[in-house]
Image 1 (cartoon, one colour):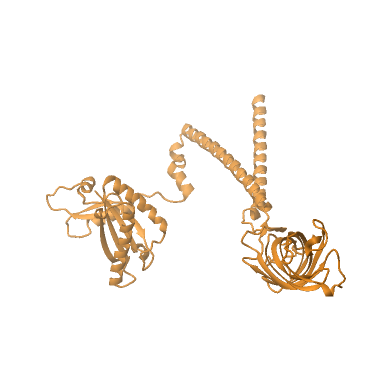
Image 2 (cartoon, one colour; image 1 turned 180 degrees about the vertical axis):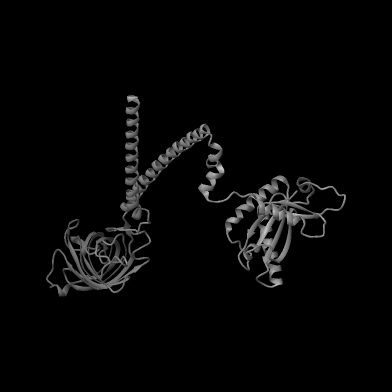
Length: 468
């Protein structure tokens, strides 16, 4: 007896510990999910990385520049003219592209005249490629993704000079700085100071293959951007990564909860089975057995009564006697596909299959396609999926198809509804022929305006019936 009491006490303590652990785990899980799901289950608004921009596509952020100014030649030998006595007019045109707000490049062509050491005027031209760096490029505006009003652009490049007098074509190094003031996102005023260093014999005097001649230049001009302007900011992916990690953990926790509840359900079923056995032993199963029936469980779980089809049976009875003249009317019921045939006295009644084989009844239920008000456009284009299967079955088994178009009589005149039912039936028939059915296997019927089914929208349809 003492052993039994000790075992019972131990068993009760273990049940209490298990119940305590279970409630603690459930409470903890519920609190964590509610706190986290408030924010993490909502769609995230994009956030952008500070100072990070997407590189410009090849077609965006191009520019053209045109400028005019003066050139001063300083060479070896230097000559005796002062700086102002060496000035000559010059021009330049260039085309380039900004790859980022700070990094760009251009191809520059220009020239005109310069005074050599003997104060003689010589014609020249040049072509060079410059690498450009906008030191204020990071000061773009976040709202329009364009550069700030001012730009300061140092540049360095390489190219070739051409002296038209002595036909010298030496290599040259270019460098300088350009300032821009943006009148609009596309147009800017430019001011540029630069220099090109080349070989000493460029002007016909000095040593060959040795750097020493310089062409200083100062100019004013315009810069015009072509194509799309601006840059896209880089979206910060870290919030999305964190959300995906949280969702994965959340889905795992839900899976664990489902497994736990499934195990609890199995234990509850086992407990109910043991209770059923106990009631049977005590002779109380007849009194309480209804609590264990599937119908009772379904009623408790779903809250809906079981359908005994009394309404459908009543409708069938009324349809059999709808004429009220005592004559029995044969009603063939195949879901919604119903056809009536008068039954002459002494004529044997055919069953449904014999009527199908004779072509007097359709196969199965009609397939309905619903249309928008006053049109032959389907309410939902996904209904066309049904036509694929209808055409496949009809072609495979050599079936005939009857297409019946209709409109609702509550809207539109009789003539409008007649035309509308024709166009709706014709639309479905043409779709079937597109799917490989022959015109001879399709018959079209036009009901015009009808009020067979409430609401009115249900009468805006075309239905398909299949026959042998």
